[in-house]
Length: 263
Image 1 (tube, rainbow, N blue to C red):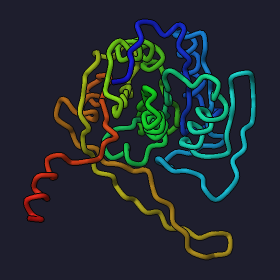
Image 2 (image 1 turned 90 degrees about the vertical axis):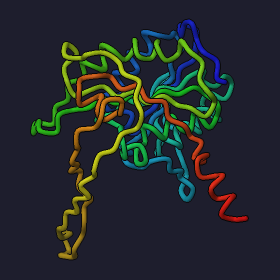
Image 3 (image 1 turned 45 degrees about the vertical axis):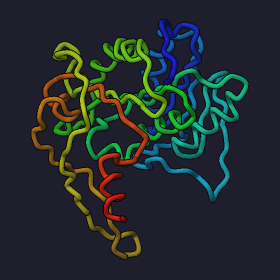
Image 4 (image 1 turned 120 degrees about the horizontal axis):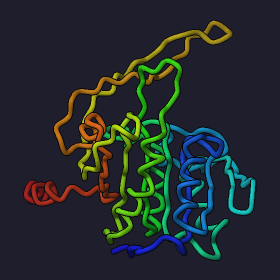
């Protein structure tokens, strides 16, 4: 079991993300973390790494850029950032807890397999460090591309405090998603399971400057109403989703079936 904290004031917190060191979300999470602890470190990708999942940089050198006393960027993936933070930058005293985000957009359902935000939390969990991923949903119909951060700004600290007040198994991380609504419309918290939503798989074809065909994977997604209790359903209904995720991929339900089949 991972230890719990009655108070984060003296805990060493590592903040990272996949949207990059200059993203609005990580700046907001850094402020929130500093409201909880006196020892906050930020190590994040130099550039946006959305959709990189739990990937490592193995065939090119990584460089650490020190931006301030406890603020660093890395020319790599979110996973690279956590590895370098724990084993190099903070090697004298590793973090007590890792916070990932705040992601620009929700990380629910199938998103979890692609998400660099979730990857931050996975890598911390593999190192036996408690980890919480935080994501802010936004209205995709907003053509201006603006995002209302008020839900996560107002409720993130409370959500983190609720989570760290308990112990949880060493192979578990906590995934928190804030609905795409203003803070005044938040209806509360809900403990959820992973839901489902169909990814549109929109492939956009165009031509490069040399006239050769090229393709873009579009971001279009079609979400169906999910039943209450799922992460998708929660944020669709104005609830803050708090979903425990396991990094143990073994399907216990299939173990005995396969043993029987192999007899």
